[in-house]
Figure (cartoon, rainbow, N blue to C red):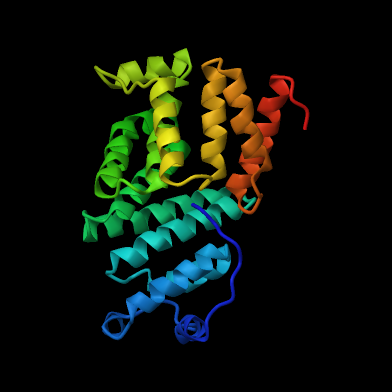
Length: 266
């Protein structure tokens, strides 16, 4: 979930995007004629330029395809579309739509790390809408798919961040949620702030400054562990990270709030 500066489309990429405009979906007989390498290249350019709606409109034409690389990117694009919306119902609808694409991508190729990653992300996102019990019930499966994503690609910083976030959620769980978890599992999911910090820092080592939320979570975890000096350093970085995406905005605002609690004015 990393977005870089805007760049100009090459003429070939632009032609590839325009080629399928006007089609609502790609028919089975058309799929054999599609150059998916070019589709993916065009999609990645739109993603890097953070053209959320344009990327979704482009990829949704391929929603009935059997290409896992296209489908997980469609899941990602649909997720970003939901995050970009201020309408809560649209957000919810996008997360469930995205999950369907992620499911199909994983069914097509269980050896694709990104399919596991986006399946796990969206299993958790949809679980949030279904309530605490559902989210906790999904927890072991979410962790399993993140760990499989890391096993398949140890250099994917977002997968490593995501397992760190999983650890933080369960380390930070209030007593009443722990009670729900204990009722669901003989051995409920647990973790520690130290484990969460390990993964957040590992993600940063793999790809420095790749994600504003990773900087925020390192600072936040240090804060929970009462490492105030380290917390301040990372929270300042999160606060000053360029705001491009909704996640960047969230990291910026939360960093300011957390810094104010330790006496740092913004």
